[in-house]
Image (cartoon, rainbow, N blue to C red; front, side):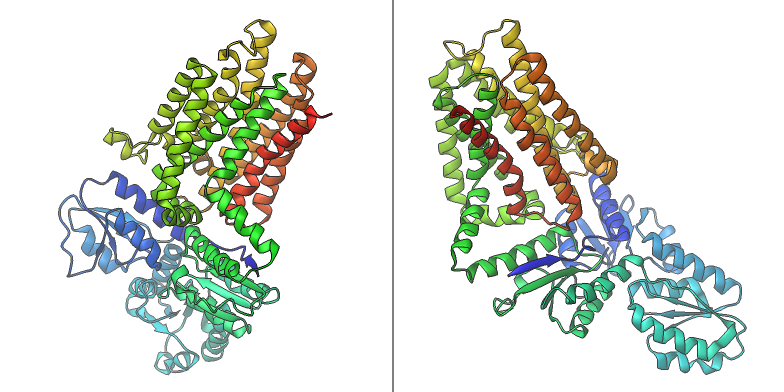
Length: 588
């Protein structure tokens, strides 16, 4: 079964802004933090916020105290409610969607100019109630063509403004506009206020219908835009279901389905869509009995058990050693393999909270095989330290130091003032994670060559140059891999670390930064061969380094790709290919 994803997925601008404001408030506030009703219409996202300390404020039910923080929901509030809240001794944060705020200003302005303001939308929807409040007594709400025609008592009005709730269906709005034109003729002014993000998502359903025979719409069942996507899927003749999460997908849904499309509402987070995507893949795997199905399941198990990346670290260490002109003993491969396996399982355990959202496939796999994973991690740690001891006691102490630093940078910090700035661990600081990982691994694959007795590399001029070149080029390969991982997480509505470089400087600058880094990396590989007298393998590593990662970066932006174990598989294959090239080199 093929799974295709809509291009327009993830939070819209207004929802993303509201979520970021909420997380920032939860990190900084001294008192309790409330949202005025549900911040957005997505229960999974609201459950997450409430687990972090967000409370739901309902007028006349919850008492606000001095020093508390109240976040105005993305749908906005009427002026009367704003005035009442402004009189309280609390901190108010306005998370109203900028698009909604513009319409509120327009409604207020036209109402003061004497217009009759007609709001087409769902009665009692929070956004509609807010707009109605800004129109005061000169605003009315309609939901059908019949409602428009029933406004006969308004014949005396000189001017009329028609606006829409931002999440309505554009096709239905056309009928509303046609009725309003007939009713009010030249007295009517129409403003198309349906959000662009809503329009794109609705239009894309028709495109998906040409490629798929089934559709899964992910999002809150109370969300207007999500329900309209579901309705559009049915109208297009697709086998369509609306789900909050993976648990809502019937096991029989994929039976007889060759291609399933995934669409999502504007308040549906990427991590929620990832979970749905991975559930569909799991249902598909259950029905696969072919050799390809077995290979798919095997690769998934290797990646999620962290055996695949361990093979990658072992292969990469071997390739770098050989490129430096050293055919290192087989014990080195054991050191790289087992240390890589142990560290990735350890980091997976320490990051298990964020993995529920950033990497739900690994989180579910880890929870299912928790005991085996932990035992395998301890066994790999023992074997890696044993290999380090057998190489040399200095290598053993190097491995212990790297292990300690790897744990330290992932542990919560005791400094409260940093936590209030969203920095709970050292790895939350910009660039710390990719730099720390790259530095640690580069030290592990190069320094033991000098510490080994007898020394495999001496600290003469040539040997020192080889160590520096080996470290730098290893650093580059691992840094790009780590940075791409962070870009993938940040693209997926990353919520546990908004301090990454990608999150701070944005997608365009991050892309150009990485492109420039890859180009310099390729130049450095060529230069090291011609000027430093390194092995010609360095030239071959251009294929598994700059060229390979350049193609990954291109695919990253050309495809609406949600990651999962396939993304890890693609990134980690570069290290295994490097090892295979190095191994092949020894036979040439």
